[in-house]
Image (cartoon, rainbow, N blue to C red):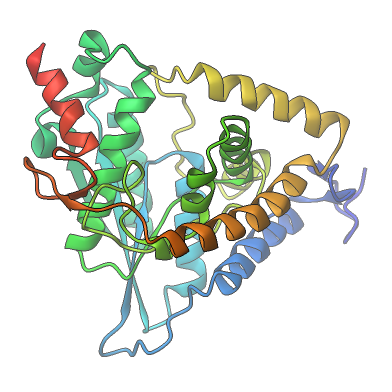
Length: 321
């Protein structure tokens, strides 16, 4: 099958749109959607100047999503003197896996001549994920620990580096899975928090006073297209699943969505369109309520609704083993 836009062979059929695209037009399509999302989410610098540029911190894990996001943002904005980009990587302490993905981060940052910073769980929190998984004091999935720790460090160091925005590589599949999980769990508060970064520090999602507005410029692009883009552009992505990945519920949702998308192309886009509207209404409600009373965590000083924040409670559990 030929590409719809030229006479070259198509490498991808986007069933949700009916488009057949060659390598070049696939890449053009992905880049166009990322740039459109940047505009629609109002990420472009307003009052920034070359003398006082806006700083964007990009969460760079070395996986396909964050590598593709970093590549496209650099290709689009590297020459804009109003924007300065910094790549931030987190080393969780997973033997072999993270070392290889960090090598991909370092290679990409060097190719792009982009500032690259790495922080570790061990140095900052005193824990390593390999040990956390082995001890598992809370009897829960590894991703539950890791998500809290990683989010806290991304936010803390984005703030430390003077970030105006924190950008992460969540793709359409990631976002549709989260949306469906929140809906099935009846978590209306989480729906509000999912999209509205302007809500600021919010207990249980963001127990930190190091708040930096976040954005997900890849969230309109399906995971398969991100992977194809990385392959076509020959980007140094580390495409291997974390050995501790064990979110059984998310895995079920992932398989359900893949089947629905196969039988009903466009399902992911429809879910997100409706979810964003519902989350907008939920956000208005939670803003009106004013939110719960917040105080400082007794251990780390972060903003929390409890005496000790979620991150510190988990660390204390690990240390007690």
